[in-house]
Image 1: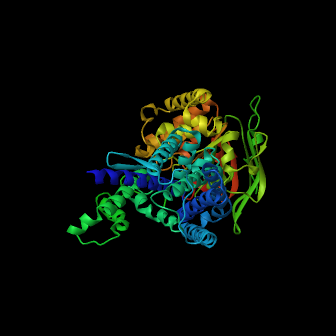
Image 2 (image 1 turned 90 degrees about the vertical axis):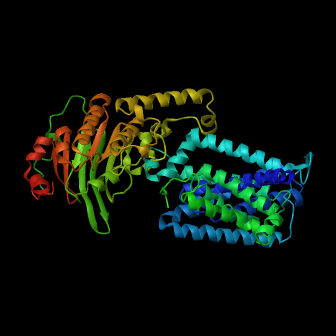
Length: 299
Length: 272
């Protein structure tokens, strides 16, 4: 029982971070872009925070703000000066460009930072406390708390605000959105800014205890893909639920690996596969994903 | 082109009549094909102005020029003291031009009310933070926008559908929602792209009635691009006929209907 509770807390913390990653992917997807560069945004954000804190001695929060500012500006410029010009040429072009950006940024980070593990620079490190036999890591609690707040703010803004309604309108029909007076390029810029901020925060949280920072961090963005499909491609609520399911599945399978092996010899490392197994089962029952609408609006 | 019946100036001028939109010699070409050839017309405030013509006449091209999708290679369009051709599509809302789409341009996953509220976007002042949190001025402002949308919905008989998701509703209702959305923008000029395409007789009657209500009660000028000649002749103030990108007639419905060139181009070939 203690093990289960312990794993549920870690799983929830990891799932909360995956939710942020999946949400970031989804809002860009809703703007009509399949974005394979998300991992490099996480990477750049986390390394900038880590470097300015640990190497330059800045305050962690100041570093985080700077990292957010840099990735936000970069994301907005990337959309305005590159994606806008190729968007009409088709999805494959866009996919290849985001894929290329991922490779370029990852290589730059690898060249500058090397492959050593490092801390993310946060103030709480591996601090935590015990209640009974259960260990609460501060980083886990912060991950859950921050994700919760960000998600609530996002959904409130998305549902009720002028900008949120404009974002949804652009996602549903760009031409009609322009016809009712929505400045589409501006909405796209705001979308990229939100994406970059959320992605940087998720990257920094993901590099915190019990994990650490290295250049494979960005691969996590790929691990959020089953979360996105599981939740229903293009659905923001689905991204959040999918993220939590994938986080829990990963942590539970890792935690119970030994027990599972007694019944089914799956060997070690099964946690990497677990999200895809859950994904398969869900898609067999609900091909459109948990929150997906039948028939995709935009492909 | 000899145009015996086409001069708008031959029509009796009403007192205080001025021009809301004036298009002069609009020429549009696609890779050598002339879609519109020196087309000129004007639309007066509150007027119901129809553009008709057989398939391929250039109706849609003209509509796309007016909605700033296509840029003509020649000509000028003056709208309410502005150079329309210098405006981007998303600026039209703020100068008072609204449009509907031939194949429905609703936001399918939003509720009917949200579809209407989106159109108030250009009229809303508060930005993301206040708007998101429903505080102070913002809440008051939103109430007034909401009230306006409810009024429009009521006028078009959509009140009972307000909370429903747009795409779950029948096509006829969706068409009305689209009209309501355009009206919620408080336009001076409404551009309608074949509003009764694909509709049965009753639905066509209903839309025609709404268009007349917009004209008589709201005094909004309308440019109606339409294939359905019978409907147009019944409701339009003036009609312009296009054929192969040329204006072949412009005048009162009765005059246009009697024009031999129109009969030959539009009615004579059995296309209608």
